[in-house]
Amino acid sequence: MEKENISENYSEEGAYCPSCGRYVGNYDVCPYCGAHVRTRVSLKVLKITAITISIIGLFLLWWVTSQKSVPTLVASEIQPTSNFSYVQMKGVVTKAPAYDSLSQTLSFPIDDGTGRIWIKAYGKQAEEIVSTNKLPKPGDTVSIEGTIRLKGDFKYMIINLPEKLSIKVPEPIELNISELSDSLLGAVVKTSGVVSYIKSYDNLTKIKLCQPEKRKQCIDVTFFYSSFPQYRDSLVFYYGDTVKLTAMLSMYRDRLVLTPRSIEETKVIPGTRKPRKSAKPPENAPKVKISELSRSMLDEFVKVDGVITRIRDIKGGVLVTIDDGTGRMTFPIWQSVLDHIPDKELLAKGATIEFAGKVKEYRGRLEVVPTWGQSVKIKKGEGELTENIAEKVEQETDEEPLLINLLELDRSLLGQKVTVEGEITRIKPIRSGILITIRQGDEYMTTPLWDRVLETSKDADRLKKGAKIRLTGIVKEYRGRLEVVPQKGSDVVVR
Image 1 (tube, rainbow, N blue to C red):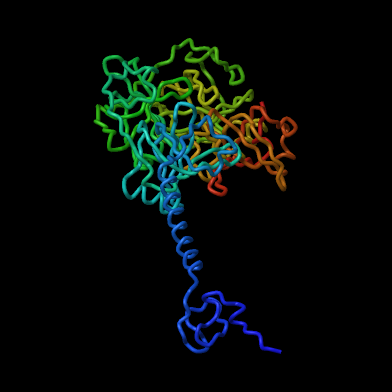
Image 2 (spheres, helix red, strand yellow):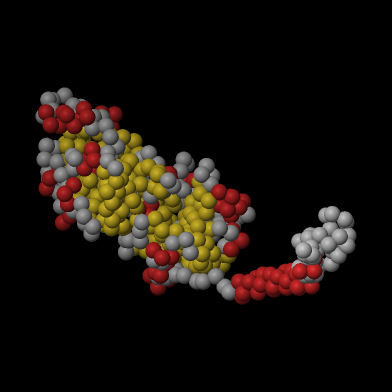
């Protein structure tokens, strides 16, 4: 039988060596004899065509993506489906940025007219924004691109590229305090006034500026220590000082307030620096029990007495708690009054105090504030205390919790005891308790209520979505989120 010639049956060009006739596949040089093998024309065309199409495809992809702009989103349009979407937003900064150098976290809120959203940056992005002095100020309009994130009901944007943050600084309007009105909300103004009121808290200092020639024309100015750390440990303001500043005009609890832009744009001009004159109460001021105090008595003079159960120093005076057997009341005695109390050295736990003062309301609590040092009479605690009051004098050691808004909740309050209020928007069962989210205006906070707290809370059965709640607890941080964690059942009050 004649031997079959394989090279003739499979004579495709490039498949067999033209010299030795052996099968070489896609080799360009025969591995047997070293002869050059001509490549099939169809394979060359396929390779060139594939490379050409790939290059053209990449170019078209680049061109299409470069022509398409990043979608614009407003706060009111953010939905659960917006999570992880890359968008651009534009709005006015409503609060000075807070930067934590330890965790390298930067955050500030913006308002675009439809709602408010927090802008955050972490790590190198936050450090770059701070180091390049690209921090916006209250009243600045910012345009920014970033990734939308949602955690429960809390929504925020993460800055991915610092160069995508652009800031437009407005031209401040120079006005007198009497010319400020709600028609200018969001505007940046330059104004000045005389300090007529100073109040320091754990996380901020609030002053009241009044127009010199019109003392009834006043406005509040709030300096948060997270944005103005230099104001925390020093007495910057005194009564009678003149303060010139550039600030954004905003609204807080239906009242116009000024949000300062920066320390550089705030100038304090020392005045006479005399303490406020005390108001002498009338001789016929009625004597009332603490349990009889009511809002109908606001700004009226009354007389009260009781046993001091607690006293502690505060900035500008002391904070005193008394009990008269019918109720308990905490009130301040400012230094200008304290200096003129005849027996101020007797001011201590267990002593009896009697005075006349004005009925005031502070954070929802009624108090009688002494305004005339000579009207305050203190007697050393010589008599026997009732069992109830004696127990309070002995056990009352905790500080009065600070009532704050969710907007004021920041890292400077970590470890402190505060009280917050809001509406329950979400309840989620977790191991050893529940996780609740509360809302106050546009602000949200999620915090745990552990079983040991719920078991001793008389309002545990009333916890439901839509209910009004008041929480007292320790400010803690969990996975970058601040929360107020109640420690006992009485810290949870449902209204």
